[in-house]
Length: 188
Image (cartoon, rainbow, N blue to C red; front, top):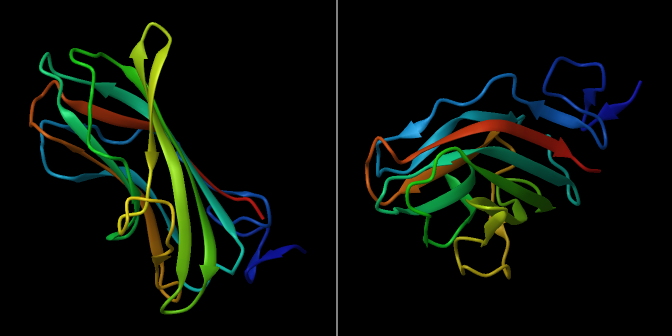
């Protein structure tokens, strides 16, 4: 029987062996709408305590839809382990009056140390459609330096909830995002 960090390959949903899926959502998230507060999407995945090992790569892929008001708001996207921000986009101005434009986050986290002072290298990209086959891509960088040069400290001895948040600059019923897909994989 194959084992991944002490968890059996044939274990319940959410447990994977080397190179396997950890989580795939079955339904879209609740929409984030009409708020200017940072808000977590309702889809997330909790990595069990002590399940990470040095050198492991956790890949997160999220896709969804974006709608905006006729006055284009700014937007910040964050990927987090619980309240710890792993990386975020720069504040960027969206396109005005969008309806159901696609967006995607592709994000890799490499475990570089484990324990209460564990560390990860976390980088990715956020891309959204601007219409007519055009797209805007923003690199997601670490919070401390806004550059991909330093690891983020994460306590790997406790369960960590991998989640994504969005923050619009202006609350409007026309400013909304929905996550339609969330895929979490361990690559090695």
